[in-house]
Length: 303
Ligand code: PSU
Ligand code: MN
Image 1 (cartoon, rainbow, N blue to C red):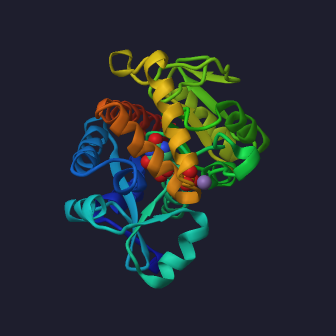
Image 2 (image 1 turned 90 degrees about the horizontal axis):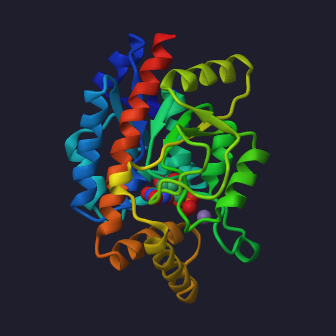
């Protein structure tokens, strides 16, 4: 097991001393945002986690290992090198075997975090059930991972490039609690809320830490999905974003963009159609999630 993981000194020290650690993914850097905003975001989010009392552990795959806790030069490579493999569960063994540079999705960041003993992971948005699933059967491996790997994932809900009600149904089937942080409704990424009511709500990080504890004690094995609404001052209203998302989904469909290329295509298209406004929103919600994730990690360690 040792040689599958390359854990930075700082992260190892934190793990050895039961200090709060927060995992971060790398596909959001390599495939989720354009350069150079992506590397700036990656550095800033680490700083926010430090400022809130936890140690950041950005995860990627390098030289046939999960690298847990990256150097600035690693972040720069992930942000600018082409190609970087987008690594979901099915790609993992191959990318390790070939020793190529890989960016971890939510699914594989959870796997790496769990192997390293990290309990909390912060991202922007998760993958989900795609619109048009009746035709394509496109369901992100992120959802099954949440059903089987015990890591708490903090996100801003799911964006409307996905089929939100079906994503919630799928998570229910997999036994994944979807917790609204200070909200009763599923946040919709760019917007603070959607019409979809959640079954679970938490108003304090301590409540989520308690759920983590009991999930573990009960041997439930799966993760917990915390959905945290974007701050009001940064949201893009439904009236504005919905038509843009529809246009992006339509174009992807017409161009026959499928499989692992679908999410990166849609994200880039939405940035283009909003003249960059969606990028700023995306970055701000990651920062907001980082604050909450650090607090949850602290509350968990303090129990
Ligand atoms: N949603 C975002 N930004 C992202 C992703 C999703 O708003 O960067 C990335 C995450 O890494 C997520 C992945 O795990 O896309 C899902 O891809 P797929 O749908 O191919 O499973
Ligand atoms: Mn997919």
